[in-house]
Image (tube, rainbow, N blue to C red; front, side):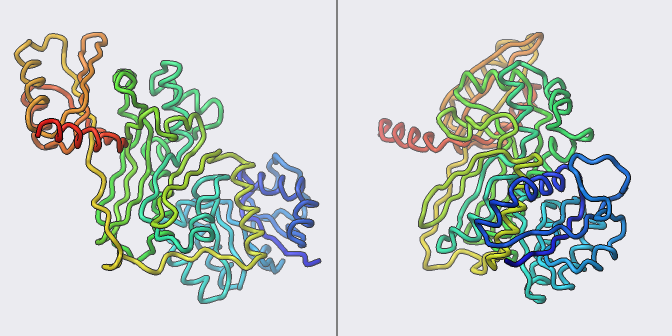
Length: 432
């Protein structure tokens, strides 16, 4: 039975999860894969620091050269960040080591470079843990849907923001209260910027896009917005309209390139993503043959993320690697999608002192020809009145101009609801 020599870079939450699984599941791994994994070195910042898992003192080192002296065959990046992780991984690949990484920031920025380096040196590069924790999104895209041209991927890719939004809706907490609770329970970092401002989710959707659309597909549009601007009043009016607010990440391929977005989005109660709560993640993949495929599960944590890393280690034993899509842009012989009709929620906030004529102007505008109005709801809070309208194909510039003229605050949120296109078509038939 072959024994694979493993080097682990980092022994924090993720690294500790890997060590735990290799200890508790060693027998199963041997029976299922017919191999053994031996950790020959662990790179840490402080060898004297108390650890969550038991590790032999002689395995710990603060020097990368000590790791290379052990001649590892697989190097696991559980460090995070760009520096010094990128340099270490480049060295590992050049030393003909296979690499497994959980480092979303590095893979998003340098994944294409590392793939080319890995191809040159004939080694595998896998990074399932960088996107969905324990959810096998990347392996599904790379290994199980090879015949499909992936046209769209969207979903909830950040557990911190999903936890916060769940608590705001279900417990009536303010954004700040929900954030503090997430930090207390370990679902949010002391500095939550990367999560709540959408950077984490954007890195993940960029990794997905590079893998399933290819690195040479141009990015036509990219948008990133976090959740800090979402209020309880907005959630209440969305509830009255039959929606939940989720921070959705999406990557969509067109005939000219791809579009990447991370934005708060209205999801109808009937959609499966509406039921993905707390720290869980959920992802939908659309292939031109298979149609829609969905995955849900825990997107973070020591054991879910450690599970993804160990599975990638086993995939290396099988000879697998991630291979970015090579087909690029849509072919002329492939039937093109006409695209999803643009639907937004226009959320107006007025002072209660706003006169009736201004309110009448707003209602008249929404009832006019500027897009197709599906529904309107209002809520009041303190000294403010909030009016929310769901509109298909709106004139965004006209909406913003009206809000300025009425001295109202305006937020525009995308709506994920394919039912509305059918509703508009039915209305058009009745008018005829």
